[in-house]
Each structure stands twice: as C-alpha cells, then as structure tokens.
Image 1 (tube, protein in one colour):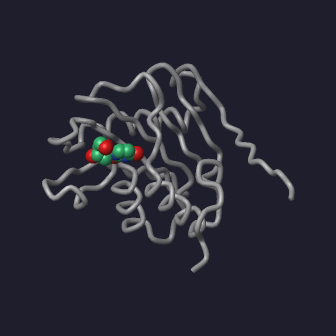
Image 2 (image 1 turned 180 degrees about the horizontal axis):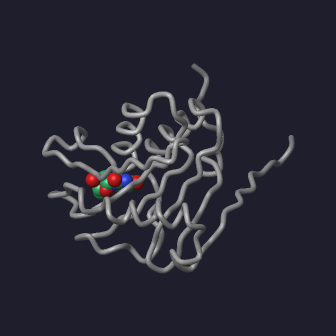
Length: 157
Ligand code: THU
C-alpha cells in the first residue's frame, strides 16, 4: 500500500491590476459578461470570457430556465459559443466572475464540476493548456491548466 497525494499550484492576486495585460483584459470581459446573465431564479449572475489562440475573446453568461436542467452555466455558454465560432482554434484561457444581483462576490467564483469537465475536453481538443482565472473582489486565483482543478479527469472514450 502506498499513500499518494496531488499537489496543486496556483497564483493568488489581490486585484485585477496585478494581472498581466492579457488576463486583465479577459477579467474585465468576464465581469462585463455578467450583464448578459439571465438568472430570474437564483439571482446569481455569472459571466465568463474565453480567449482563443487567435486572440479573439468570446463571452458567455448563465442562462436559467423554469425547467431547471435546461439552463446553462456561464462557462459552458461561453465555451460552446467559442467552439462553434472558432472550431479550428484552441481555447487558451477562461475567466469567470459571479455575484448576487450583479455584485461581484468577495471570494473567487469557482466553476462547477460539469464546466470543469467541458474545459478539460476543450483543452485536449486545443492541444495546449487552458488557464483558468477565477475572479473575486478580494482576490483572484489563476490556475495554469484545467488539470489543476480536475485531477483524474474522465477521458477514456
Ligand atoms: N453558475 C454558473 O454560471 N457558473 C458556475 O460555475 C456555477 C453556477 C450558475 C448556474 C445558475 O444559473 C446560477 O449560477 C446558480 O447556481
């Protein structure tokens, strides 16, 4: 028997100003994207922005529906739009921001498991790391690749 462990490295920033210019731009896009949220049930508005390998940015926001499972998270809304618009480009990074009634959370917004799975597959499709930027008013976390937030990913088929 051998005890094993995962070690996850990430960077914490205390404000958007500390980010590099590309990430700062993506962060601003994710926060702006919150305005596109349709969340009449949770009132939790989430915005996401995906940067493509050609430099283009695609935004998404959560969309809710009275038939609850029919709604979709901001991250998947953004990634599916990006995948449909730029099928031959890699997604090199994704940023997300959220908050009740549009007010950014203090702590970083963290993506749900289903969105992590979708990120992982687009990262594989793109053939290069996709960084994940989680935004909060008090701090920001950056993970350099999706593997860091989804160890032991399902990729067997
Ligand atoms: N939501 C997202 O858009 N992204 C996440 O990472 C977590 C949750 C949405 C789904 C739902 O519309 C609302 O936030 C409350 O769960």
